[in-house]
Length: 183
Image (cartoon, rainbow, N blue to C red; front, side):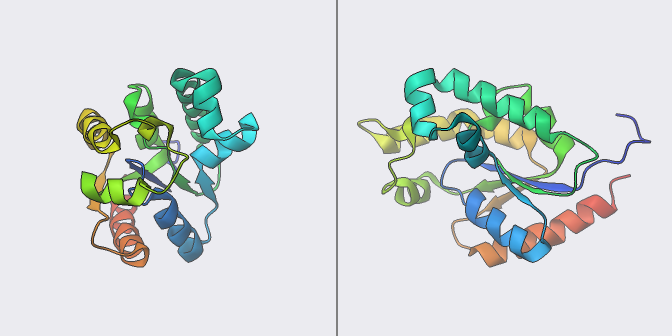
């Protein structure tokens, strides 16, 4: 990395579906005034269809291709500071993990599987959970992705016992320390 190029001071939220990325992203946006980029929403807008339709019509691989392309696009060191909320599976592609760290301070929002199940139970827009046993699917995906989240993150926060305001406060304090000591 060229030290003469300023590193972006974005806050990037990663984590499993239902971990709180969108909610915490909105809270951080309100507090900081930084633009919020919800990657799933951006992909839906660009594609002109919901993620469920992208998965059904084009397949998961095509969705992941769009995700990686957007991540590369967001890696612009001249862009203004942003809050970036990623999709839960962005870490599954090896090339994405270092790209996430280049974007800024990466926070892994984590919750236990039973909390994720409770949070996602009522939504129909989770194509990976459209299965006979969503609980087993959540456990399997979380186990598969955990080392990838660990590799990509600067900080891991458990979201199950805290509200979005408390999580945002913790993220802001930790990010200040991170950015002030990164030289």
